[in-house]
Amino acid sequence: MDQDSDKLSAALTGIAVAAASHVIRANNDTNDRLDATQADTRAVRRELRELKSNGHIVRDTLPHVADLLSGIALATQESPQATLLPNLSTVSRPSLISMLTSAVSNFQWPPKPGSYTANGYIEAAGELTSLGLIFTFEEVRAFLHGLVGSASPDGPAKLQTFYSAQGLAQAIISKSYSAAQWVSIWKSVLSGGGQPGTPMLTVLSGPHTASFLTGARVNAMNVKFTVTGAINAGTPLAKVAFPPMVNVPAVVVSSGVFQIDNVTGSEFTISNRVALNNGDTPTAAILLGSCDAS
Image 1 (cartoon, rainbow, N blue to C red):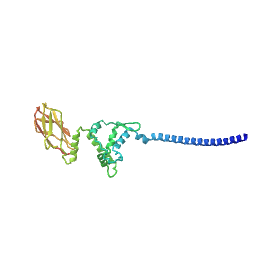
Image 2 (image 1 turned 45 degrees about the vertical axis):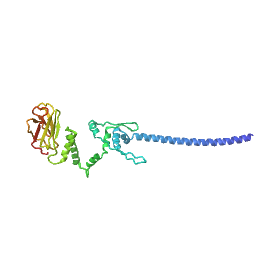
Image 3 (image 1 turned 90 degrees about the vertical axis):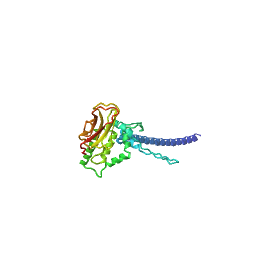
Image 4 (image 1 turned 120 degrees about the vertical axis):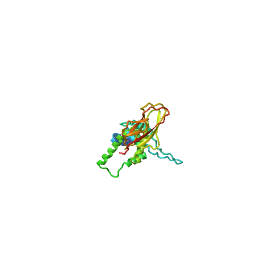
């Protein structure tokens, strides 16, 4: 019996040792895998830290950059989903003119940034979003492409380009025209000829209206006034402005009712010499000596 017990014990011991060896090997293999996984995790963390601190990534997540890119992305056509019938809907181009008219005067530097959620979704668009969007508009792209020359300009040519842009900006800033007046100016400039276009009439505040009679030119015009209330003598009634490239010379008004004041190189003011009453409809016949294009 003791001999059988010894044999059983030896057999069990062998099995136990074999099982222990297997467990040890399995445990070592598990530890090796855990070590490899931890090493991979550390490597991923290191790469993520490096990615988050990468200059390209940091710049791309700045609000101003995101605003510009968001504006460009607004022109993206969504990928159509599979449907039973054709999907005819497309991304329609937004009309920005009315909004830009009120927003442009409030532009600032640095531009007002947009706000974004932690994962990059837009909460409020920034100023540069509209700039990115208009870069996708056909006429803007066509105009910018029109500035491209056939070859790289030399130094003097680049300086002339800079001077012309600076001169245009300074000339524009010095004016206080309305949108309609600017349209008239550009039409006059583009009409060609030595007498570019027609003058522009601005009616000043008061109980009256005014308009050019047919045939108004930069060297002769008739301005008809309709009075709807009492107007004291010496009241400025209307202002006549001229297109670019026209010098305003001495002005003569052939009526004792009116006089010409505040003559500058680009405009003059029509005032009444005598008092006017409700219902009066006088006409100022105005002649200019010379309007040569400069």
